Length: 174
Image (cartoon, rainbow, N blue to C red; front, side):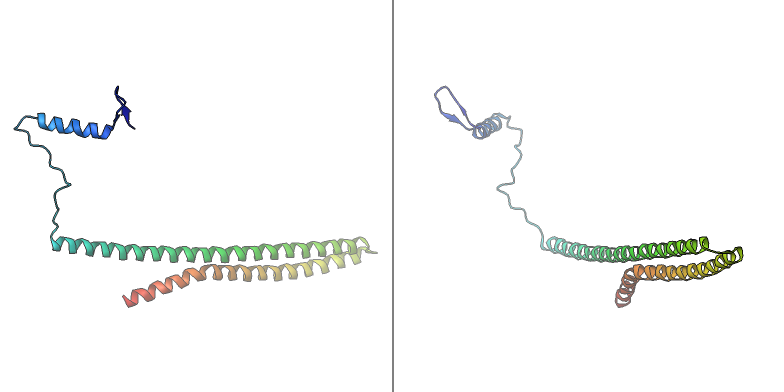
């Protein structure tokens, strides 16, 4: 931002500040040494220091790349594990819904038969038959659900197992 004086000349505030600084240095007592600027000096760094710095930078880059790769692999592994678990739980929930529907359908069919029974002995026979069939059906459903849950656990942990095996192989090589 420039200012104007009474004679309408533009005044640059940076030039004014530099001029004031030069006047202050000139007015300083002679026993005060002005602070040297870095603009005119060349900073010499020994070759050994420069080489050491470059080696440290290279090591830092390699360490960063190793860490970055490991983090990306871990992220991918977790994404795969979570996706497998999500799919598995969807399948498990769908199976539970199918089982509930089948059980409800059987219960309604039994109720319809039970109500149309002609005698008490026929009603008891229908009840016994339904209980046996329902027990067998629910046992089979539970076995299927257990197998599905085991499959989900296996598929969800597979990416972690693979990552662990890769890590073990890398450690054997190193």
